[in-house]
Length: 233
Ligand code: FES
Image (tube, rainbow, N blue to C red; front, side, top):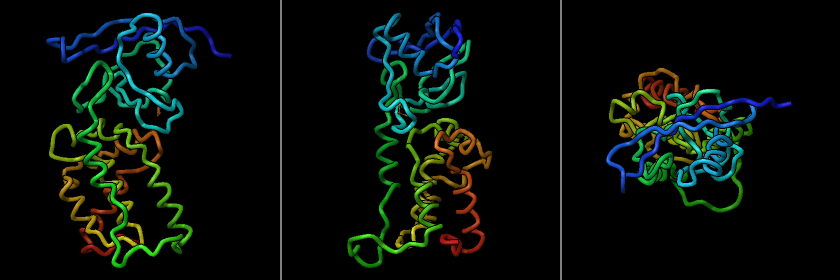
């Protein structure tokens, strides 16, 4: 049985259209200890701050739209358990549209640009293509990225250097492993700033979909060492 719990949430409020600078507003919430962060945000919106801007769609960890920072750590709000004391902020480094809603349009355009379909040597003939089951399983898993940008937000290299971020490299690695793909994915990964990665593994630790962008980066780096021969290993 969930227990009653007193929660205190400080939320970063900022409307660039009217506010000269951001501020933090504190809310006291009588909740349950099994609430997710999104439950707390929704409660605050419904009972205390009807003008609070936030974003979500599925509530089950599938749409990837509810990312926020909680006590400095990027998470999916619908999946992260609430804590008695929380500072809730929008995902960095994205421009804030209002409160917890960030502008992902530029990053989504880049993601689309990286998330290419296989570039084929011959035109797609239609219908299912034979693919080795173990590889198919690995590709399906890699393709389950939510594009939530939690890993990008948590990446210290993105914060400091010209690096598009771990999610993009994972997408490129997915294509590099696809047997029908003839694209120059390693070169794209280098262009996206992959060599700026610190190798800290934080992206993998943060990924709500249990994916490993860090492993994708390691595989590309191994490919560089081996002279571009390891993509389909
Ligand atoms: S609301 Fe869809 S992932 Fe959280």
